[in-house]
Image (cartoon, rainbow, N blue to C red; front, side, top):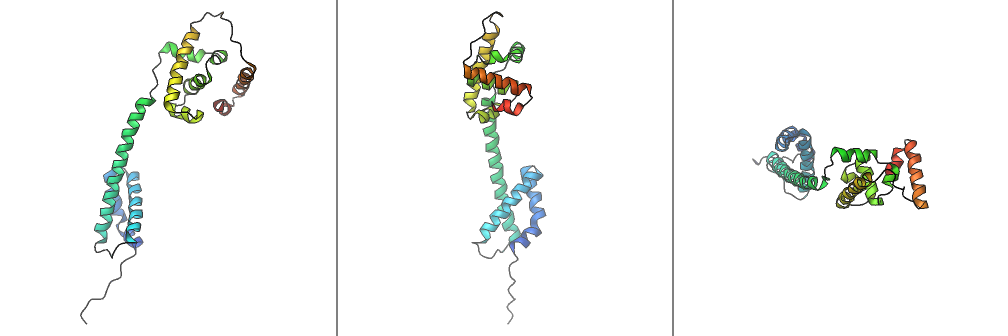
Length: 202
């Protein structure tokens, strides 16, 4: 019998180990990043494992793996382009109204009593953003709101602080309800104790 013996297919792990360096060089150059290239290689392995379970014996393992890697790289590049476009649009929404140096000083010099004259939503937005330096996204996550609401409250709070700064120094102090008075005392105590995690939580 002159029929050549059948060569059993090599396990996928063996194939992948053999071609992995070349796959990574290809994917890294496709994505422009060694790290992103590694992510695409991992995705290629996962897709190859899924495809091999339902496919016939592979005649050209190298070509088959590179075809999977190519499509995985294209998918990655499309996802990255969508993410970059989305972040570019978000960045426009995340830019709060610019402040001038006078406003910067007013906010920095505002007393606790002045802050307590702002509605709670405006107060928290101004403190988290302008005093503690959090981004709008971080502020929205902390208070369980959305960026649009935080941005609006921040702008209104800044405007109100400007109004309060223009009032006469002998303006009567606001009268606080007892719950607000207790809250202010707690805030002061935690601030003086340098418990800034608690201050942020408030």
